[in-house]
Length: 211
Image (tube, rainbow, N blue to C red; front, top):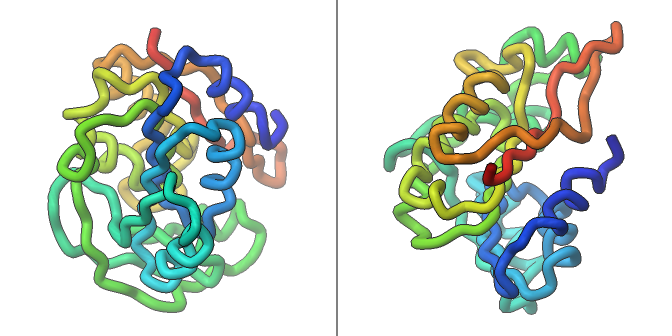
């Protein structure tokens, strides 16, 4: 599927004129920019626990009143947890990386730093969300468990989902599907798939929408 496939599916949903969109694991803000272009009336809540990246996000969107940046990680309960910062920062995670990640990425990916980062429940920060996008490198299920106060009203969830564990303790796609199904959200498709050297799908962006 193309880079825009899941976003095209989102724009077809019956969202309110001013949707609240959550970008969990916003990183450099590239996906946030795509979401804002697709939904010009949106309010975007960006969560990024890496302080350097959070500062860059704040600077990038400083003149955009639609965006609020939170220098926080999303999880099931308030805490301070250790973030493994990878040599490719987009792969940094609250879970320990495994050799499987090295294998499928095709290169050695060292942990270059560990940071203690604050973790919050999403439903402790927001009272409403229409779309929740999560790219948390294996920590998607704890973040969803911390959003249970919002999920019955959410129109769609986009979550990075793996078919094999890329991080220790990572919940795989079937677990995400079962959990979100309890809130009336059904799997629509898996987009932007990443494949291993044998062509097998390893992970992708799973779109869940209200059934």
